[in-house]
Length: 301
Image (cartoon, rainbow, N blue to C red; front, side, top):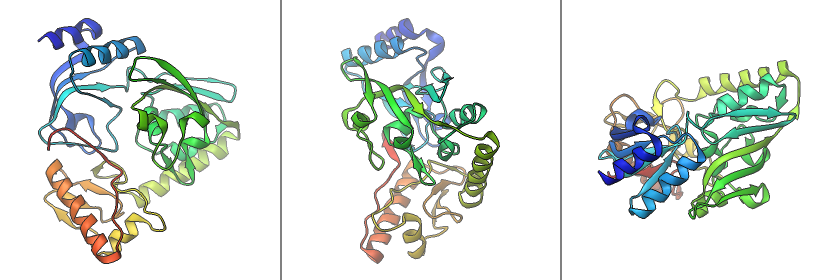
């Protein structure tokens, strides 16, 4: 009760939920209840929530819109801090775009095209927020966040706000200094170039068509399940292992794109885990390659 009161004092009761089902907040549509689910509206509130959790030795996890995440069926013991719709402001100055961590990449891409700015088209269909995309250097169709970021404001574990330059971010394949050091993304400056609005829109439409055609968007998923192994494509290895359409309960290797594991309706986290392990073991047996998961895993399974 002390923790609940403390959270309510910082955020207001309307921004604190108890026993909130996390399947409502993940793109996999899977996950049990979080003890506490909170939605700060300012950096100050975010800092104060983290200080409270640290004082009371309560685990916490930063959530965006819940893509790239598998939450255990028994839920999360601690505080889920969502940085999403209440911290999602976007503004444009010249060729620079300023966005808070909770802004969806699709919304940032839409703002860029309105202003006739090119360079962010690759991210227009990635189903995530800026914070998560920066942390893992998200990319698609030959573009990635390292190509467009100028600087990022982060909150350190000690409650210090730091501005990191592109070089200081140490962006690599699905990694960054942010994920290594447990920083929290607050906002970023994105550097783009002036372009032709019609051409930018045409490229975004083309990328959208390619996604719709090739990815299983009709089912809930966490995006690409596995990292790209060096020298291979995860989806092709899985397909060549004869696993296309393989399912355990409602967890299935997508029939459309084998790099995706999908929830056909009522899959559990346990079924997803079992299917991931089966795919890893089968691919390793056939090709000697151990696939690493790209999807993060939190909570109790």
